[in-house]
Image (cartoon, rainbow, N blue to C red; front, top):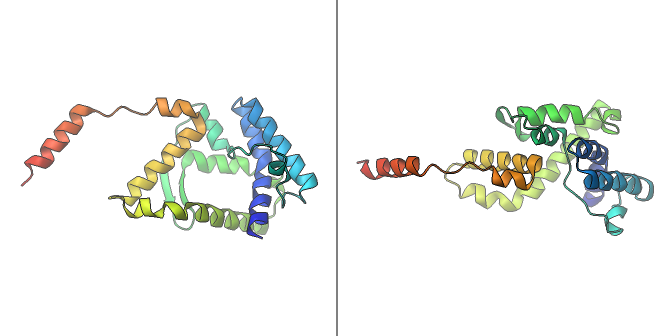
Length: 185
């Protein structure tokens, strides 16, 4: 049952992923998102069954409008940790509003949207349970969660280019910082 709900919710996101992949000039991924949507909708009972995966059609990560904005170097804005929702940023929040305007998400009523949001949250939470030990072992869980979230968003927007754009560590600053720690009484 949980897999069917997850498949259905993922299928609802495919048209937005298609359009956002087009905006990011990712033609192959756009066609794949489009094909996954129509195949799973027609042959997979509205997306409850993932027929496209059974037909060996690759499943790419969902593309959001926030990813497309990041692809064109729109800054993330403020990072916000919302209770009951989790991490987000101004760019991602604006992107979610735009994604909600694409059909079929735009056709959902308010109660249906709330139900979708709730199930998405439960799926996201279930996917992250295996990583809780990293958060628990971190000296600053908030900073760890923030950096992990922002790095993930940079990678989703820029791909491998994000890895090349990582800021270099300032060795002088680190040396001074370590000297200050060693000099502390």
